[in-house]
Amino acid sequence: MDIIECFLGIQHVSNTTASSLKVAIEVLFSKHGLNISRLRGQGYDGASNIRGEFNGLKALILNNNPSAYYVHCFAYSLQLTFVAVTKKHNEVENVFNFISSVINIVGASCKRMEVIREKQYARIIEGLENREISSGRGLNQETSLRRYGDTRWGFHYVIIIRLLVMFSSVLDVLEIIREDEMSSEQRTKTVVLTDIMESFNSVFMLHCLRRILAVTNEFSQALQRKDQDIENAMSLLKTSKERFKMFRENDWESLLEEVSSFCIKHDINILNMDDEYKLRGRSR
Image (spheres, rainbow, N blue to C red):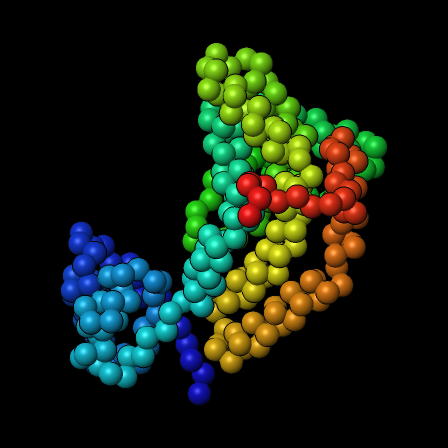
C-alpha cells in the first residue's frame, strides 16, 4: 500500500490556546469531509500549548482518539538539543554571542551592509583574477550576513561559513565604524569585536564549529525529507555519531593546519600548542 500525502490547507486562528487549535483542526477536517476519529498521527514542534501532557493540543486529540499517536518533529528535536548543549559550553556560547554582536553592528544600517557588499565583491573579483577562488554556478553569490534564531541551526552553519569567507571585509567595515562612529560606546564595541575576531581562539572555534555543524546540518536536512521514517532516522543518527568520533580521533592535525593557514592569510598570531596553558581567574 502506498501512502499519499495531500496538503489540505492553512487555517487562520486568532487564538493559539490548545482548545482553540483543536477546534480549528476540526473545522478544517469537516470542510473536507474528514473525521478526526480516523486520524492516525499528529506531529508538531515543542511549543508548550502543543506538547502539554494534560492540556496540550496533542493530549486533547489523544483523549478523543488514542490512535492519533504524537511524534515530535525530528529536526526540531535536533535543534533543541543543539541549543541545550551550546548553552552548557561557555566557549561555544561565547562564539555565537560574538557572531551575533558582529552581525548587529555591521548590519545596523543599509550603508554598512552596502560597504561590506562592495568590499566583498572587490575581493571576489580579485580572487577570480588571481585564480585564488573558483568560479561556477552558485558560487560567490551571497555577500551578506543574516541574523539567526535558536531554532534555525542551519542558519548558524551558513553564517559561520559566510563570516569566514567575508572575514577581511567584515574587519574592514569594523575599522570604518571605529574611525567614523561618533558614539564612544560604538567605537569601544568595535575595538573589542575586532580584537576578538583577530584572535587565534576565535578563528579556531569558527573552523571547529564549521566542521561540526556541517555534520549536524546534513543530518537535519535528511530528517526533513518527506520520505523519512524513524528507522532510517536512527540509522542517520548512528552515522553522524561515527563521523563525530572520526573527527575527534583523526582530524585534529588537519583542523590545526586549516586554522594556521587561515591565520597566516589574515596576519593573525598563531598560538603555540607547546606553551603552558594558564587558567584564567584566581588560583585555587
